[in-house]
Amino acid sequence: MKPLVSILIPAFNSQQWIGDTLRSALEQTWQRKEIVVVDDGSSDRTLEIARQFKSKSLRVATQINQGAAAARNKAYSLCQGDYIQWLDADDLLAPDKIEKQMTALARCHSKRPLLSSAWGHFIKLPEKAQLTPSPLWCDLNPVEWMLRKMEHDVYMLSTSWLVSRELTETAGPWDTRLWVDDDGEYFCRVILASDEVHFVPDARAYYRISGSGSLSQIGLSRKKMEAQLLSLELNIARLRAVEESERVRTACVTYLQKYLIHFYPENPDLVQRSQKLAESLGARLVLPRLSWKYAWIQAVLGWRAAKTAQFHCSKLRGSILRALD
Image: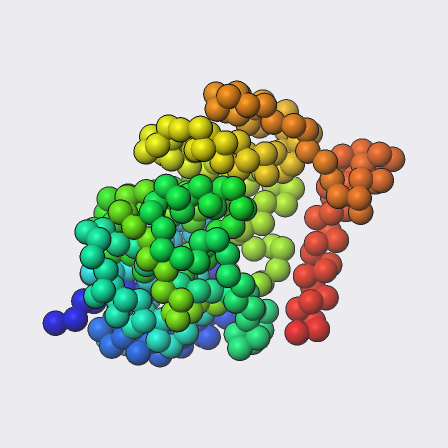
């Protein structure tokens, strides 16, 4: 009998997209699948729409609002799959995404393989998605994968992964303390628990750009800043536990430097924590600079005004792009 694949979907106020997402899950050509949707206390019609798709292979559960990580943990507790496909409620899978990865799995010789796929951004139409290769789009060992992520400021979409139950159990549950980058922290554990990451180029996933209000945006939220720094600290500690070397320390400092601007200068305690961690890596972080478009605002009105302007300009730009798509 072919392995069972569980497609796990956390959903919160996703009434605009949840129908398309569920159809993309149901249309998977890999026949032996189950779909578990967990509504995280939505205040719109997300739960009502999801229940319209209920069947023997699609289960819908609900909980009071606890965050995406808690909803993912709930979904996993309800599934039976040999392999796990995570799918956010606004993202999509190509119809043969899972089948392509399961076929590639049969050719893997490693004991704990982890499979990723190509992916692209889209706004309204997935056929317009731009699939732009990154240094992660190839077969890599776990440490090299993490180094490339940190050094090149690239990542892999959560939906691109196909994870065995063994790896999922080894990595442990999603961290409910993290209100941003919970996927980055979680898949760091999954990747480092694997023995090789296999990239399947003809399998595809699609990330919907839904606006600057999405969970992945830190913005001006202190809660998200604290979560982001905690994620950085956890990822760096786990990577160093696997390999303590000069190249690892250098990559970790690069990683910290990238995120410093989110904390500076309004949150000196988070800046100090970042600097202390950098010093443990044998380096010091340099004070961040804004791009020329906002540097003049910072010079005249201060950092907070400049970062607020940057945040709202990003929201406006996103709104214009969605309107024009």
